[in-house]
Length: 351
Image (cartoon, rainbow, N blue to C red; front, side, top):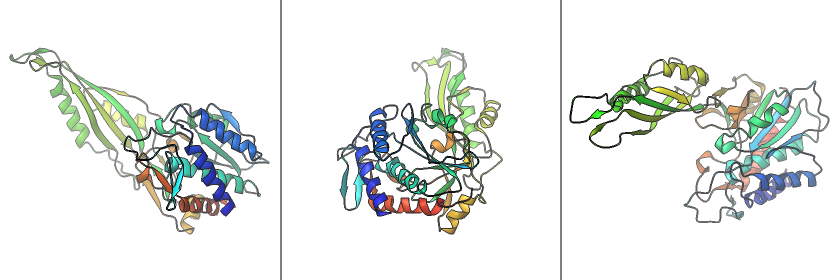
C-alpha cells in the first residue's frame, strides 16, 4: 500500500502544477494520459475525459465505476501561496485541487491499479472526468453512455472517507413577475414588485409533503432580485432567482410543475438535469462500509453523482470544508488511508 500511496502523491503533485480549470483541462488530461501509458495502460479519451477498463473485461459480470474529476475552480483571491505549486509541509500537500478532488482522483486510480491486478467478481471502469465544477455537459454526462452497463458507481469527493449515500439535487429558476408601468405619484399601474412579493412569500413558506430521512425537506431560497428603473416609475417587471435543493422523493420536473402551479410569475428552469440521488441502506456496498465502521449521511452539495443514472455513493479523502478555499490542502495521511479504505471496501465485493 505504501508504494501505491507514494505514487498517488507524486501523481497528484504533478497534476496540481498544471492548471485545469473547468473546460480547460486539456493539459492536465494530457499529463494524466501519459502517466497511464507509462504504466502500461491504454486509456480511452473522449474530450478531456479518460476511461480505463480492467483487463479481461467480462460482459457477464457486473460493472463497478470509479469516478472523480480532474477540473478545478479558479483559485481564490485570498491565496497566500502559489496555487499551482505542489508543496508538502507538516504532512499537508498544498495546491489548487489537492482536496477537491485531486485526492480522490489519484486514490481511486491507485485503487483501480490494485484491484484490477487480481481477480474480482466485477469489472472495473475508472473515469477521470472533466467539467464537474460547472456541471458541464462535456464531462461524465458525455462519457457515461460509452461505458456500457454500469451497476454501481463510487464518486470520489472529499467526505472524510464517510459514505454519502444520498445527495440533494439542484435547480436554478429564473422567475419574472409582470405588472404594468405607471407614475408612482398617481394611483395607476400594477407594481410588479408587489406581484413578486406574493410569490416569494409562497416560496418561503411552502413545505413539500414528502421529507427525506437523510436529506430532509426540499429547500427553496430566493437569492437574487432585480426591478425598477427609477424612483417615480411603477415597475412593470420584477425578476428574481430561486435556488432549489431537491430530495429523492421528487424529480426536479415534478418540483418545477408544483412551483409553476402555485405562483403567478413566469418560471424557467436553467436545467432539470441535476436530480437528487439515494442508495438503499441494504445495498451490499453500504453494508460492507458499515462493517468497516464507516458512517453514512445525506450530502447537501452536488457532484457528478447527480449525473450518473445508476446507484452510487460519494466517498473520498479530504474534507469538504476545505474545498474552494484559499491555500487548499489535503493531508498526506488522508490519501494513504483513503486508498486503504477504498480497497477494503471494494476488494471481493459481490454487487
